[in-house]
Image (cartoon, rainbow, N blue to C red; front, side, top):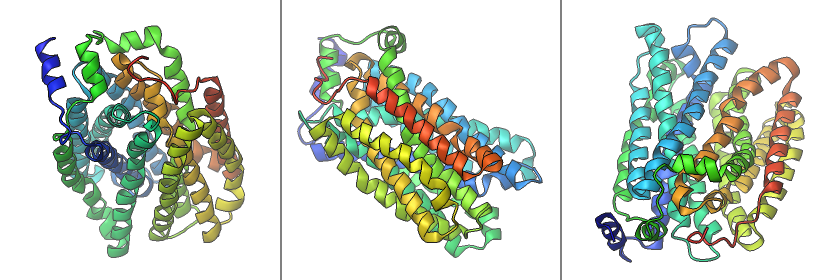
Length: 437
């Protein structure tokens, strides 16, 4: 056995890698990473346009802000390849630590970035660079966190363990939106647009220190340690992935489209449209989103445990069929302008996001062998982000202008139908042995 293998296989101890510690480490990282990501999403809907883009038209400012929002989704597959390479070559733990650092530093620096009024065109350029770095960091995060949970899971409980990285986005969103809500309640519009919006970005530094503390205390997963011992690593995981496993990458990516579309239409687009077009007060809409995300969090364990009992495919088929139907509720509920109807719309969309998102924590890692699992799960997840989220707020803004909210709802239904087709083409993975794939 090589020295590296001996070092990693001898590192874990029952105390060091208790189930509770592993679960918390996989959960806390995704919560912090998605907090960082959603801080920008919320800021893009509320303030990024006026601060960094000198257009006279609010619509043009919103579209420019949504373009910078999409940049990170282009970067995420790059991060998945980059961190996936090292995650499959040297281990899950060290790669997860690095991805958290990249994301946290980029987010914190956005909080200190001068506005267009201060440094001119350099401001949006630097914003795009830091947004790209955010995407790189998040691209390496999710796959590693999902593997950390599922490669430790007992037989028959991978869905349950895999739900903890999936809970991270709900908690991250609640932290981000809750902080913006607190600022909206305590600051005037002028104070918020001048300096208040920077506070959530700067606060990321505190969360990253917490995440690093937790992650540095865990050891390598037993599945990866066993692969090292058997010399099952490949030199170029990305090349091997697309030579031999391109089909599950594509199916996994398309299956993820429904999750992303539901979430970013219900949050980023709806927040922007609700505040600017429906004239709902910012703090009121943020409070509605916080309420709706609680239902997303409640759906996550329900759906994950159901996927352990009935299989990943049946749960996802039911979830995507419901999402197709949910697209038709957008015009009558959200378009009504009634607060109760809007709350119901947001709850439906985000509950279904939780239903379709939860099984992915186990499903995507189950599609790939250990030697390319970090790369494969991360790439599939983040290509799904490009297809389902990167341009979703931008397209929704254009559709709403040209055809109304019914067109946006139809867009959601089409996205869900694509995911349904991918799920129907997949094999069931609930009983797969991760060491024998």
